[in-house]
Length: 69
Image (cartoon, rainbow, N blue to C red; front, side, top):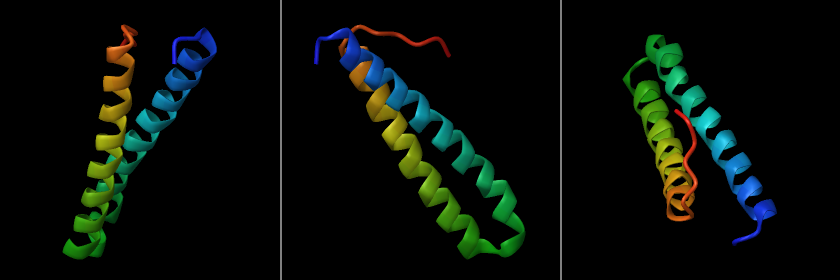
């Protein structure tokens, strides 16, 4: 995975996963009115999205690519 095209694909995937994680964390507040089970489900989903985001960030870091925060 050393080609610039592969790097661009990985960066694009990271940005999509990052946006998804941000969206899922926002859903926690949206479902807060629905009760503790809904909050727990949203929290679990957001945690999984954050874990995916962190995995992509690590892959980018391993390649020596740094994205601005």
